[in-house]
Structure formats: structure tokens, C-alpha cells
Image (spheres, rainbow, N blue to C red):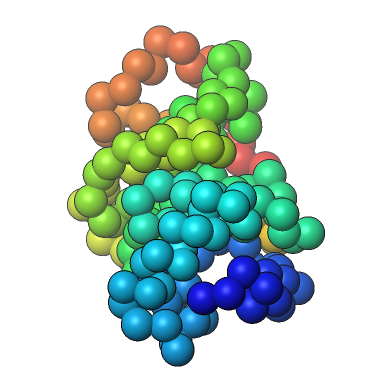
Length: 182
């Protein structure tokens, strides 16, 4: 994998708004490389700064024009493909103004996939598993234009926080109990 070719490929995907890739996706973008050559080339791209290893198996193009404030959400989506993932718990309650502390370096995500915590250069991503069926989740989350992950309604974020046994003392109950702005 030549650096010039990799730059061209990454620039192409940047023009389409993509700057986060799994290792498997990158392998498909460079099909002429064998597994060993691809791995060595990927390591060279990381060492040269063309790519950043966000976490195991996920890479980001830090030079992308499309790079935005949702890098952690894009990484979260790459880590749990095929699962329902949505921003909830402290992250959403903070966005709704129901928690005074703003978790700037942590993204709390509910997922139908497995739980886990990932440290990335763009903040900590914390996945909390939910066993709720998809039909129950769909009605309580919404898509926001330009945002990679769906977000929980105020009521859903509060319910999730209580359900997983997190600290509810820091939540302003008046704000939580006010109607959702939808």
C-alpha cells in the first residue's frame, strides 16, 4: 500500500463524509494488498499520521475535511455495527440540561450489543447493554440530522439511568419531568 494511493483513497471517502473506518473496511478499500502487506501498510499509515488508531480495529482520518464533533459517535457506530445504539444516560441528560456536570470526555451509549468501555483519542465511549426489544427502543429515540447515532428522549434517558442503577442524585428532576421538546 503506497502512501500516495492511500491518501487518494482517503480523500475520496472524505469527500463523501467518511473519515472513520474499521480495519475490515480499510482492507476492502485496498483489495490488491495481501493480509500481511495490508497490516504492514496500515501500521505505516498510522506511524506517518495519515491515520489514527482510534481503538482496536477502528481508524480515523484526522486530516479529513469532513471531520466533525461527532468523531466519538462515529467510532461507537463502527464498534457495534448491526446493533441498536443510541446516546443516552449522562450524555443525553447533560445535553438536555438535567445534569450540571458536562461529561466532555465521555460518551454514554445504550446498545443491544455487548457492554464495554473504549478509550479513544476523541474521548471515552461507554456502551451499556440493554435487553429491551427493538420495538420498545424505536419509539423512545430519534434521529437528528447530521448526527451519526440516534439520541434518547429525555424520558428514555432518565428511564435508562434508573434502570442501569446509575447515580440519579445528580439529575435535576424538574427538568427531567418537563415535557420533551420534540
